[in-house]
Image (tube, rainbow, N blue to C red; front, side, top):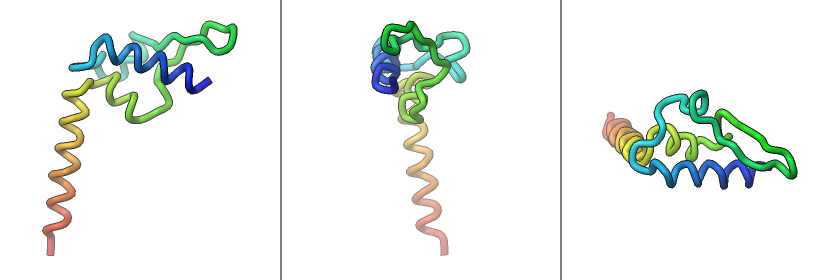
Length: 79
């Protein structure tokens, strides 16, 4: 199920933690995992945080969080 998919996604993230696999990486680097006795494959992890880490790595996640923080400050300081 989802837990197995998340576990497989985390294992892929551990292999390329800094930069990830690139945008829409599931097309070229699908996540393979066991679903019961079935070998399964997914193009995305069905979890936005895991997908960002898979696509963009720590650097991409840090950039996204920085962007959200800047936008939040901008919105908060508007009159």
